[in-house]
Image 1 (cartoon, rainbow, N blue to C red):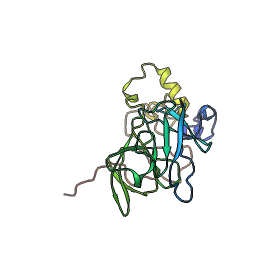
Image 2 (image 1 turned 30 degrees about the vertical axis):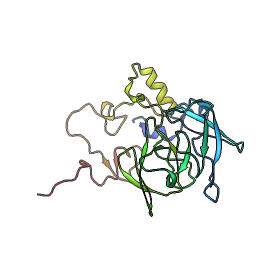
Image 3 (image 1 turned 135 degrees about the vertical axis):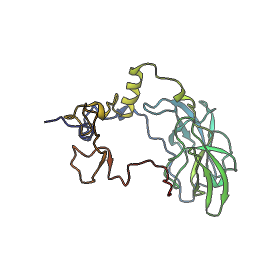
Image 4 (image 1 turned 90 degrees about the vertical axis):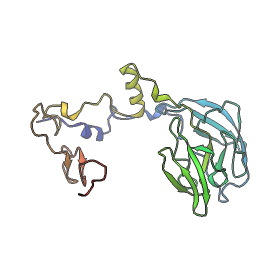
Length: 245
């Protein structure tokens, strides 16, 4: 009888697979939006720049004149004590938060809301930014980090600037322990053994025999010990379009 495979053990939620979320500072999101889409401007000040475990970019705590404090990712050039603004009439300067409908074309923005008031969902990783391409009656056209364009509601907020921490992935880890602690903070299992390298008792794909490999597509209704690989895949081939001859 074989052992429980990795996906089965991970689903049990033990401490081996659980992220250390108690060490995290706070969720990154804008303050709640008022019913009138936060007309005017609210002044604030950058109180501190923090490190959040498992996050690729630094974190900033901004205290508003209303007394509330919210946490956001840090654009390049922001410093402690810097005055910031949030609202429709805020200046188009690095670190300020404006609705996309009020941001000029060609401006680089980050931490963009996907729907008004959701707190920010896109362009949040280290070194990421999006570009405001144009304004239309359907919404604002934004060029995302993936180079694709998307229509977004004019009332969705975004931060002016580029997320700090660019070039983070260019430096090698050098030691396995450094990579281990990063994956531990993210709640990922490391190191990961290839299923092909296991014995047949430990994984459905495992075996030392180099003959015909087992098909990696599996039914949606497969039992937990077999439900690995390409689950309910429509096709197992290349994602490129096949040319018809």
